Length: 226
Image (cartoon, rainbow, N blue to C red):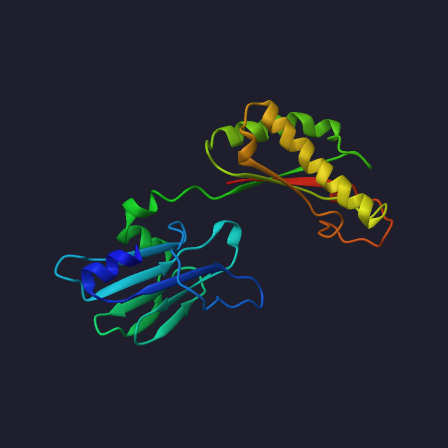
């Protein structure tokens, strides 16, 4: 993407991307290609267009992201969804913003190629075990069918616990819960390499409680299908 801009316009426009979290700034290290689902880079190549336009698209589930647009003249950081940087032929970078509606009107074909947003599902477990609560088994079948409708995508299962038991025990139990769901997906024909299982123990409660408190809503696994 960046190479095409340099070759056609003789204009060194570099983009560097990283997911950004609270208090984190985009790195200023070596440039790398930016995921196409996050950026829309537009250049009218005929007759060497007077400008290049870079638009930062929102990430799935509202996760923060940022991109640094740099030329030999200056550097601008885009860190809000639909932020825009326009690079002039003289290397100047001006920033602005757009909207989803305006972008869809301008580039309908490109936006139609973007993957659908991730879907998230939560499953509850019995106390102290990696066995799904009885009412959840039928729901899991519906989740599996939703995942099957998105072939080739990534599935991430994250296990959680309440604050009963030691931290070490809950770390093991959370991972066992995630692995149990992963195995159920594999048993339904999903490729093992498509599914990741991780455990978060008691660190991310849905309902904060004191230590030693049983809370059914915290005994869960979250399935994210991308």
